[in-house]
Image 1 (cartoon, rainbow, N blue to C red):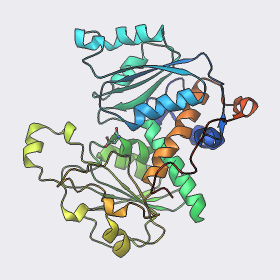
Image 2 (cartoon, rainbow, N blue to C red):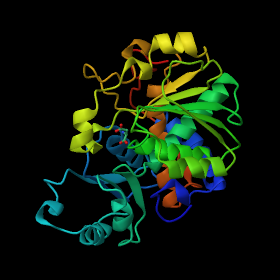
Image 3 (cartoon, helix red, strand yellow):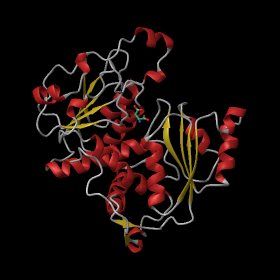
Length: 341
Ligand code: ASP
């Protein structure tokens, strides 16, 4: 694994497998059964210049659960970028304060530009419509865990990516990550104008995977293993697109009816979240809440062990975890949500 995590392009199959193994070792800590202090004294700089709940808080929690501490800044208004400071200067300054930095920024390529000015490990927490590598890693970790539970194998699996495939950075990173594995069948379904960039399709097909593009979900998906649905990224639309886009029609609805009628009992449903719950958004339907096929909250939980694995690997403490474990002393409920499975 290289010094930074800016794009999944820097990951080999071996480095991804290593991260999956380290994440599995982090489970007792992520599930609050054990504690470690391997990052005691280390400080994370969490710089988020775009909206975030999961990524910001889970990177923060992951670093703390390794024994480190976190300093953060949110939005442009409260940072010196509002005074015209460059990415270079901010990066150089932050490197003097922190041992690792996570950054999210609305411009594609900005996190790489920031990382070029520092020797401190930088993780891309999402750069505009570009990439979101840690999300793709936790998504792959989720698929792997769910498949183990269901007795399935990734090799030859059928995966559907649907929603905003043009601006959805999580699917950009995920499709490249999946392409490191044995040949898969990948179906892409998106509204017109929001298709997966063709250069990603070309890359993935050149690695031996079969990609099919359909224009709606109204067909047979009975052999589907995973439906990965994404939010329409309206914040990235041009004014013209905002005027013409009418919202997602029923043809793109992932709900209980779609799963029951078109998929199977072992199809799992994933979403990077947030799902847009506003009327008319037609994002992933809440009628699946409580259905064991809905893996979205298992997916968010998996963000902690995977982000711990990323920090431990980048900061070179991945081999120390087992030697540094103690039991927790505080109260932890057996399950954290009322609908957990
Ligand atoms: N949370 C994900 C991201 O930051 C997905 C989304 O916002 O729709 O890319």
